[in-house]
Length: 419
Image (cartoon, rainbow, N blue to C red):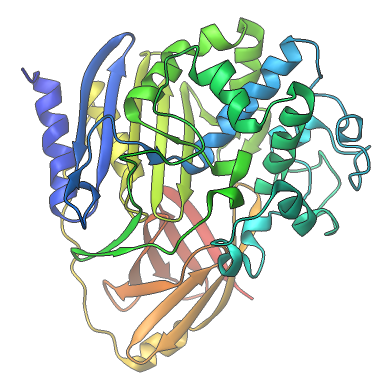
């Protein structure tokens, strides 16, 4: 029987699903009590397979938190110290005496991100070994002196996966299975998509298209895991069984400043809220723990452009008795070609310290956008200056009079500046 809270939660997520803005599964729990869990839409639209709380989804960069847990476990066992230079564990790696494991764990190494490099989308469907991934970035110049600032880099997490394997004698996936998933009975989590795993899609006005193929080897310890909302609840409750108290504190300590909050080891910390989020081709996800309320909310979606962040914050608001809004349908307008031409160009933007390029181009009567590491998509006008795009989550863009673009990207404020 649904409680008053769960009825409101179901109405909220159902509204997003009916608008074509969500497909996936959600779960809300307070302490050991599950408040709400339900699937929406289809895991496989072509075959009519519904999403449920037991459906596995790719969780993208939520993988990083699990990689960080593995490093902290190895530290507890005396195999490493996070202050170790990586040269101690990866001899011969360029600048390895200046870069520490800590730098990799909080994205302050200065190593460029291979995912945002030109050409990644062209090779992402090709299976590659970790050695090939590392060879792709190891000889590139550092962006800055290690430890001097933050720049989000998937590359560092690939190196951490290599460290886990070398020190444990197990593959990365097998290490997590034995030391994280099995102890917490997370039977639907791992590296290889299993039976019933969700298929990734892009959604546009009710029309669905499968996203381009991304071979999981190209994500590795930076983003290759899949899981379910039920398994992630087990993980959240079971963390004290995986790590000692001092290691747990290290995991969620805000080691560096990141866009108005702090970055721990593979997670974002803002006040009492600890977030692990991910976005990958065809999927977006977020898991948030509100520590003061012991409230856990997780949203997993197989729509790359789902309103996952908005849904998570609204579910948390319902659980906490705070105001929230039901979603509405966006209204699009026609804009003349001369207006579109004003916005064509290359822009750069920074998020989590990482600089990315964004190319805006004209294609007949449409404005198109391509962000480094993401698939090209359409910018749809909501007014002469305000546009909407479906990328990793939902993005609204305001073209400003000074030539900049103000973006609301899945709840995060970002500024893009013309090159």
